Picture 1 (cartoon, rainbow, N blue to C red):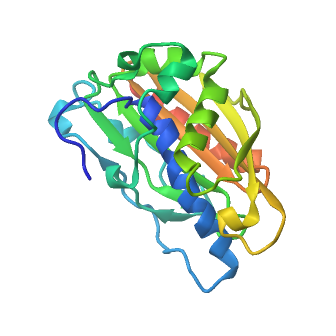
Picture 2: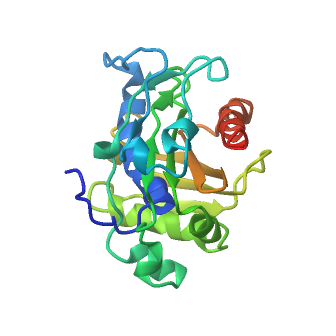
Length: 253
């Protein structure tokens, strides 16, 4: 269901972070189908979607849709699949704020005037998946939250709260700061583990998957870049994708 015009609870970066993890749960199942008959939709550069009119953007001539990751020369080997607000959800009421030790109202995105959802880019050979969300108007708040040392663990625990009913065996292996990349203002790197059957995978035993998030921004726009993989992500490919977004942010003027 698409939200009403009321301010969305825990939006901006917060939704941009926890929700792709909900998508990651679905992505995990699609990743497991790479050896099946299922074939990801092919395509070039899928256009990103935005939840606000351009008249209500981050500023004159500044719109969030221009700052998400898109398919191009710096993302070779990826299949592009469009995503929109309807593909996203919300963490349980108050869980993230409580973990961070702040009021739930402090995560409100009442000042967000424009949010863009970039396509999900997936390498069908390795299963590496990258997506991005760019909210405008909450940059200072988002950066402060992401730099909180509790943030990686809190995001991981919020994800578990979302996934608990469907994947009861899931657990956190590690949660900490992500790899340093040029232009990145904050990052988190999380490893989860679950029984293979909970992830709809064919092999037995337990399976680990990696989730990294990188945050960059300037002025009123910030972009969260999400990386999901069953294998440890290829940092050279991740760096190229991240650099594309950093360059877009830097060219704001």
